[in-house]
Every structure is written in structure tokens, then in C-alpha cells.
Length: 158
Length: 158
DNA sequence: GGCAAGCTACTCGGATACACGGTGTCCGAGTGCATGGGG
DNA sequence: CCCCATGCACTCGGACACCGTGTATCCGAGTAGCTTGCC
Image 1 (cartoon, each protein chain N blue to C red):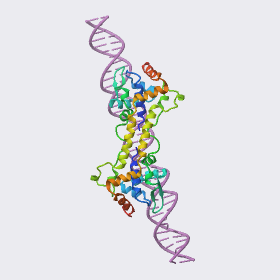
Image 2: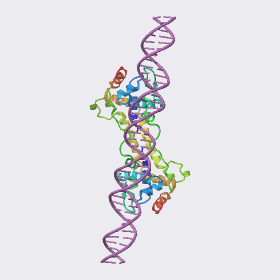
Image 3: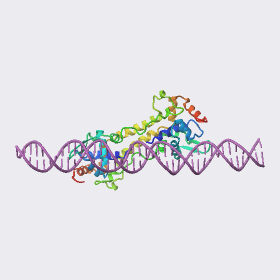
Image 4: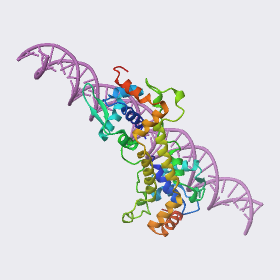
């Protein structure tokens, strides 16, 4: 899995602390990561419609939806792509004992098992929303944690 | 995910059709894949203890356990390694608002969500055994399917 | 005919090149805000 | 005092190198079985 997923999720959590646009550079120095590379992940979120980018002097990124309606799966699919991890090569249709293509109406058992596991994985990620992550943060670091982040984001210099 | 997983699973299914050792070259030409690369996957299965390799003229690979006790998860972990797909970088401990290390007793919410999804994925793969895959094959291609494979493996030339 | 030594051929196992996707970086296009001048 | 044109600084967006992991391959070490010669 792409490491940028972690950055993107942290950014989504941070963006819930404020309504104004936050530039990528701010998010980068807040997390102490490469600004250029983080921009790539944010662009992916923008293409997926999870965040909206506003340009100009006071521009940046804003969440488009309520945090409760954004799931972790949304972010993962936006950054890593919607493709499945496992792809069936149809080995059963190759070799001297290849099964004819007309008998391959149903997917091969291996592909089915993998697809089932992938569905379970996605379902688990779909069950967690950005709001849930924020709730866990305030439970661990105290209620003013998110407020401190929002305040830091508004200060001119980091 | 590594593409060799698919090859390894097909090999495990094929190995259930016969008790004698099957060389890697036979498995390769049966599936019409690279023999050298398939050997690497079989070595991984051997290191994990799922198959046993016998050397010499009539050597090859044999399953060590009953197919019903070998799960798809076993094969996946043997080939792709036991490591998780997602690894937490502990971003929360970096940057100007880093949370102190003493407050990080519990894993961060993002890592927990990912770990939960990974557990669900593994559980789904653990629920499917090689025997289940074989049963699906005979249901789709008819009872003599596995017998044909076993017969082909015993013929001198492919 | 039985047995043992030697040979052969076949097997696995690890060490070795190549390629592609993820990682990281950079600069150009576009836009909203601030400023200064005019009415 | 209000409005508008101008400039600017800041933002995103996509295009460009680099590296690590997976992909593919090869050759050497080792062993079981067959052959052959001898007793």
C-alpha cells in the first residue's frame, strides 16, 4: 500500500479543525513531511472530490463534505486507486489442460476467495469515518487538541 | 500484492491431485508460466513448511499437511511475507504540534482502523482452505477434472 | 543370481540482472487580494 | 469618500528524475535411481 495514504488521512483529520482553506505547505510543515510530495496526494483527493482546492493568495484545501460522510475507504481509494490488490491472470485458460473459455463463466475459485477478502477489507474501512478518527484523537489527547491545531493553522508563521 | 501468490495457490490445488512428488518444471508447463520464477515461489512455500521438497531423479514438491488444514492465508503469508500492508509512520510524533512520546501508549486511530481492516482481510482468507478451492473446481469442471490433472502429471512428457 | 560401486541425469537452492511502480522534486499556469490612482 | 485598474504574491496542477521492490533468469550443489562389472 502506498505510504501517502497515511499522510492523506492525517490531512483529512486536520482539515476538520477549521473551515478556511489550508495550503499544502502548512499541512506539510505541520506533519514535517515533504511539501511537494504531499501536494501530489492532495491532488488525488481533489480529483476524487473529497476536498476542494481554492486558488489565489488565501487559497488551499477544504473538505467538500461533512467529515462524518467521508470514510477511510474513500481516502484510500482516492490515493491508491480503486483497483483491487489481487488480479486474476486466468491461469486456468493456459497450458496443456486449459479449460475452454466458454466454461469460464464464473470467476475461478482463487479469484473469488481473494475478492471476498478484499470486500471484507473494504467493508472494514468503509465503517470508519473521519469523524470517528477525530473522536479517537480527542479521547486520547483531550478536547482542546483539535482546537490547538486549528489555532496553529491560522497563525501566519508556523 | 505479489503476482506469484496466484501461481502458488494454483500449484497447491494441483498438488492435491497426486501423492508423488511433482517437479517445478512440470507445474510450470502445466500452467504455462516461467519455470525459474515459479521455483522461487515454491521455495517460499518450502521455507514456510507448507510443502516438502525431495531431491533426486524422481524428486519434486509434496504437500506436507492435509489440504483441508492449509488455508489461503497460509499461502499468501508464505509468498508475500507476514508483514502488514500498512505501516504507521507515527506522524503524530513529528512537526511543531507533535504529541509527546509518553502519550502514545495506544496506536494512533488511523493505524487501528488499518489494522482492523487487515485483520478482517486475513480472517476471510483464513476461512478458505485448499480443499474448498478443489471442491469449487470439481463443481465447475466436473468430478474427473482433478483426476485428469493427476494423470497428466504422471505422463513422462507434457 | 545377488550385490556393490560408479555414473548419469535430474532435482532443488541461492545468487545474479532487469523493469516497473512508488517516492521525491521541480517549475509553470492561474487566481484572489492588496495597493495606488482617479473621479 | 468610493470605485477601478494594475501589480503581485501566493496557490494549485502537472511534468520530470530517482530509488526500491518485485519480476525474471541463470548456474552450481546435492541426491536418488540406473547401469555395469564383479563375486
